[in-house]
Length: 115
Image (cartoon, rainbow, N blue to C red; front, top):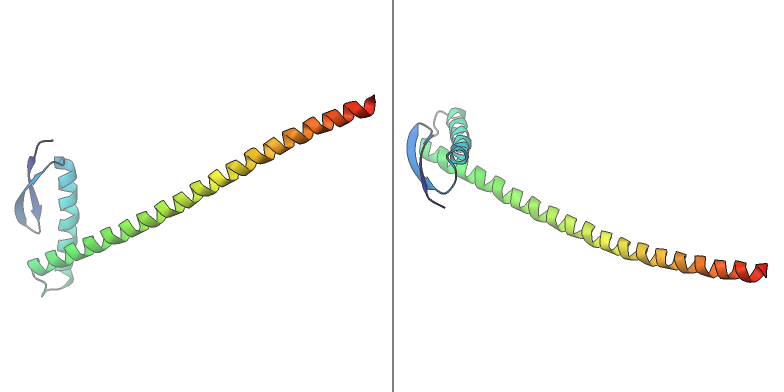
């Protein structure tokens, strides 16, 4: 994939980003960062742009790590569900086999009783 040269604006500073991602996706990410940085800048008159950028990065990294942990937990839960489903399928197959054998035995007994 080729690199795209995209200009984004974060907290009033324009930056050139080289990425393989689309312009729209990159602009969306820049918008998220810009919103976080601007929110932090508005929260305190003593907040500097570099500090706001660092805090925004920490917040985004924290969110990312929590999402990765949640995703890992969901994968484990799905794995357990799939294992339980396989176990229940095996039990159902066995029960169906036993039922079929019992029906055949019942048919033989009924035929023997009617003679």
